[in-house]
Each structure stands twice: as C-alpha cells, then as structure tokens.
Length: 139
Ligand SMILES: [Zn+2]
Image 1 (cartoon, protein in one colour):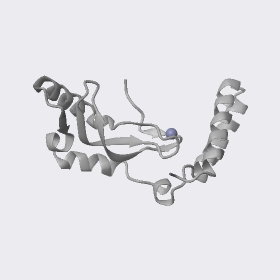
Image 2 (image 1 turned 180 degrees about the vertical axis):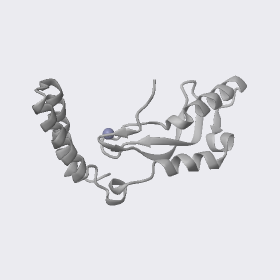
Image 3 (image 1 turned 60 degrees about the vertical axis):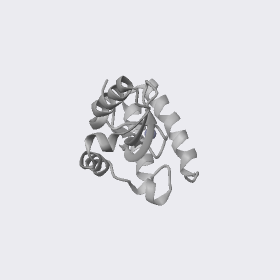
C-alpha cells in the first residue's frame, strides 16, 4: 500500500514525533507526515521500511524503547524533514489557505462539467469543511 504525501490539495509536512509500533515498542525521533488542514498523519513513506525493521528488531530483543535517529543516522532523518518542509499554514497558524479553496472550486466546476454528481457532492462536503476550518485558528 503506498501512502500519499499530498493531502487536502497540498504537500504534507514532516514533524518529529515519538510513536508506538504495532508491537508496542515506543520509537522516538520518527518523522511523521501531517496535514495541517485535516490533521491526518502517517509515517514518511521513505522511512517506513526502516521503522518496521527497527520495531521488529526491538521486539525480538525485548527492547521497549528505541530511537529511529540512532538506528539509521540523522542524515536520513534530515533529508525527510527537508523533503516535506513547513509551509504557510504552519507559519501563519491557518488551517486552510485561500489557494486550497480556489483549487477546490476549480475541481467542483470540473465535476459539474463532467456531470459527476458523486464526486461533486464529495467536493462540496470538503468545501464545507474547508470554509469552517478557515475561520478557526490552529490550537
Ligand atoms: Zn488533509
């Protein structure tokens, strides 16, 4: 399963977090990709395999806490952080940027012209969320 690095019409941004593996190992220094708009997040795809291997080794050795940065080196981590930098949403504290709403309106027009009513309804729902969020501040 390949995970998208785009969400809500823009690139996701990488932030450092500590996360639990499926086997219950606490792994520090993990770059997660987050969407500042809808707050969805997942592991950076570049490091998915490294994460799984580290978690597997830790579980095998009975280790409860590990660091991804210690396991693979900070260079690889830095590279991922550099690939998905913070954007205007992060700096301004706004969940939705005007350009996201503009491109959504373009897509709604496209769905209309294709007479794709299901897609159009989905886009209108997203537009409702975007407009609600655009008035809210980041916590
Ligand atoms: Zn999103």
